[in-house]
Length: 275
Image 1 (tube, rainbow, N blue to C red):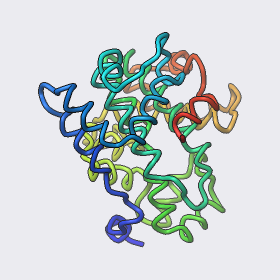
Image 2: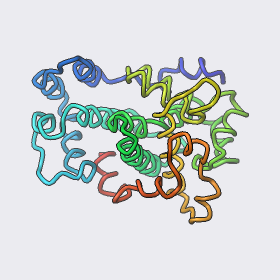
Image 3: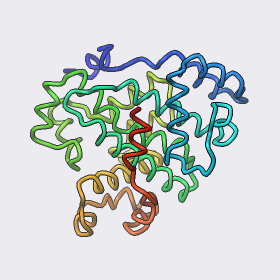
Image 4: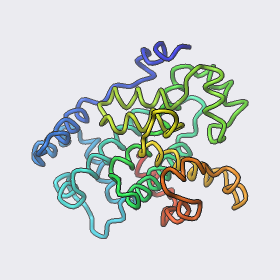
């Protein structure tokens, strides 16, 4: 199936929920209005409940409870509220995906997002954009499983989604990868251009004329999260370490491992995310 044909399938590329679109529009303004954001979220009780559950999980490591969207804005700030809204919208838009263990998928994605955040901070980049890019970097895989389940099942049979060679197998079979599909998804949901570019170039962030440091962060973080998911030992980490990307980011293996989450994503965090 050609990429444009896949993207034209409505069920494969879900539309951004109306209330989420309204909230994102307000958050993208130069001076967002907390009242308008709270009022928009309040029109969807389900979204409100899931946002508060996620905000009070270990996701943000808060020491006090958040009881309202207004509290979330006041305590977390606009960037983290943006992440909350996007995370809830993503998990609710992909309730069932043929051939995908969603608990494993989101655990891996959340771990990638956490590593993106700490790497971005150390590199003086936006940790909010990095977290969102990490969280959404593999959504293209979900879109592909929904839009062409039989085709992707054959790829799954030969190459695991967590195999370091996965993208090569997709490119050989289809002519495009989950990164291309994910970038199209992010563009449809009106994500910032920096995040769309990071998703599009995450596999080759510094090839040719391309220079996308945020894509490099996603590349590095997703490598580390995949390695954790398949339990690579130290020798396996050394053998698969993306050293060229690391050099261009000014990192080495120990520096990357030092940015591991203080706690890898727990069942509790997943339950809040998937509620």
